[in-house]
Image (spheres, one colour):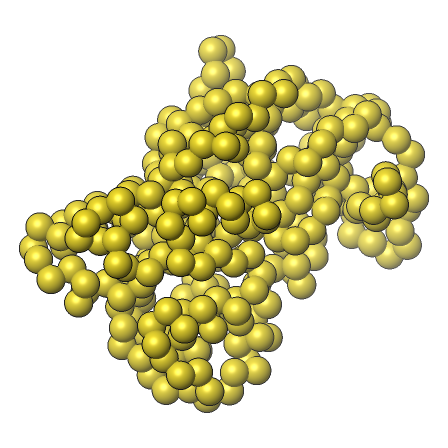
Length: 301
């Protein structure tokens, strides 16, 4: 598999691994994929979620196996198929699929928002749709799938409660996050931590457009104290947004925090090359608050 794109910075492109469930075509960002294995028997776990087939241990690493057909309400015809081994949100998870077809390089601008074309059982677990030749590839929201199965793998909201009462801070913070659920959770957590002046944008393009407009009006540094961005977003991803901010003479001093399920050693090196001021994995909301405190020179309690 050619994954040279992982060596490139800020191209606003991604590689999508195409796979099938029944006759339908789906996709996952290659950045989440560690390897693909042929089906093998797994050990069932008593009292587990209905979508969890069980566990197995390739190379002494325990991995949970999730049946994707079960997750999206499709009948399971017991095809052996393949396991797509993933790593995100600091978790190793295998997704059981029927066939793996190949990798496509696409631009985030070519991804159609799911509400336009997707309905039914898949609507809640899709982040976008790509038209490829004569077929549609539905890109699934794997973070939501995993969080629905195991809520404790999501944002560690309890970390915010541990901070206790804090002062109110009025520094304007802009957030780029395409998941409505996560953007609401992030903003709620930051407000509990004292940061009340928040602007949420559903993708990097919208946030960049706001920065460009403010730059024309002047005094942008007084209107934006810090930017928090996801990586995976339609229209413009977080790496492209970071590159644009950090290569702009007016905007480059604005601190940029990448807050994403994709942050690992490889992605961290990429973010550093782009000039990100901090990079955090998505469950660590408490550490996000600490990073904001540090970057804005605020003494946390």
